[in-house]
Length: 182
Image 1 (cartoon, helix red, strand yellow):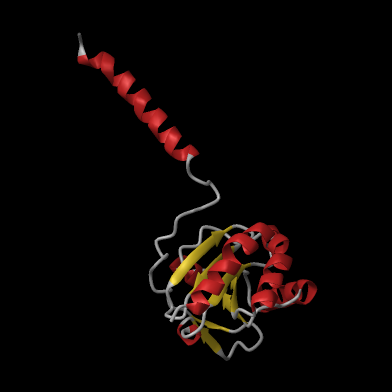
Image 2 (cartoon, helix red, strand yellow; image 1 turned 180 degrees about the vertical axis):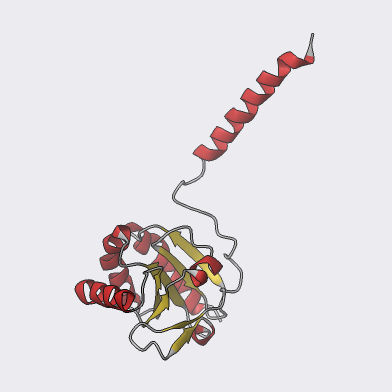
């Protein structure tokens, strides 16, 4: 029998295997190469005091959250109340990284107006106008939320808007666990 007749069979088996693999994975979970790695460093100006900088390094020694958001992001608005409740409930220091809002004065006005409208739960808000810090963190879109441990190691990445079930089942237990670790 000619071997060329087996090529479609092997291709079909490979395709079925890939489909079965895909069905077993959660499409909402996008793997991050940063899990278990040191958090990428950033030095960015603060939104309300642009002559002051904030860095990832200064957060070491505490469990903290980095939340990337933008004033133009509809999903960010959807997650904001849930994220605000998490921050309040857990008293977790949280850096809001305002991602790729454009302009200078317009940027500041848009971001400040957005926070005035929806509330500012963040410990500090970093300005990432050109998106370079977001790229360093491997951002695929906003919103994205990272949990970082006391040693500055990224322990979790949530892609998309954080929702109540994820807060209760993933983020709260993880933050509790990381706080207990030395």
